[in-house]
Amino acid sequence: MDIRKFLTTWNPLTESNRRPSPYHGHALPPAIATIVAVFFLIPQITDVLPAPWNTGLADAMPATAAQQISTLTPDPDLLSVGQSYLILTAYTIGILLLTALIMRRRDS
Image (tube, rainbow, N blue to C red; front, side, top):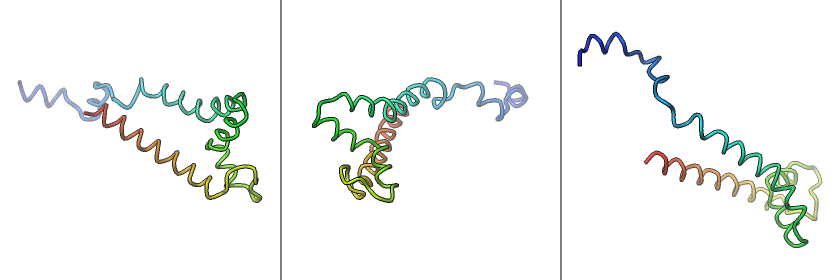
């Protein structure tokens, strides 16, 4: 390989545009679909479930837990504030573990 040709054609600013990035493109639509499903569709589906299931699942949704934490007078029918913090912490840890698993599988 001729080093003069390499030095004149290679540019670190444009080299990244030649290689497709693993973090762009195909990974974004499933991520958006997952966020929409967790925050908008699953809470609506819990209303259709039978009585013991709908209240338990609805209480464990992130939006309900965040609402319970942020209100001045928590609803006694929902989870307590401490339990709501645990739910949000569990969601955060679960997302981080799932992300680490996916990244480890794709990068190896």
